[in-house]
Image 1 (cartoon, rainbow, N blue to C red):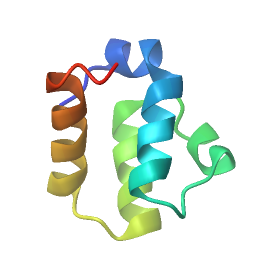
Image 2 (cartoon, one colour):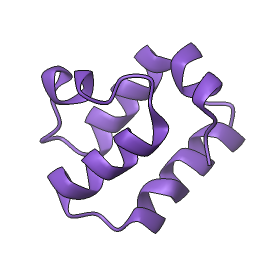
Image 3 (tube, rainbow, N blue to C red):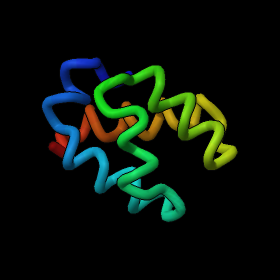
Image 4 (cartoon, rainbow, N blue to C red):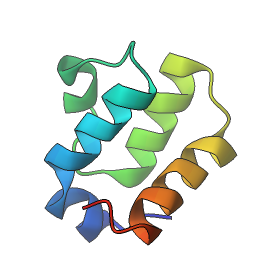
Length: 68
């Protein structure tokens, strides 16, 4: 899972990837969870209906591929 530091350091890139994967998410939505991994995962679960495991896999893939 992505670390708090990695999330904060790459926030703009991560926001773009999130909006690309989950098109219904807006910048205003993401502002609510900015910089907080657990809050972001919970928010994405609630807003998209996506399982926590799938969201964590998304972040793992992003982190492991060096997408930043």
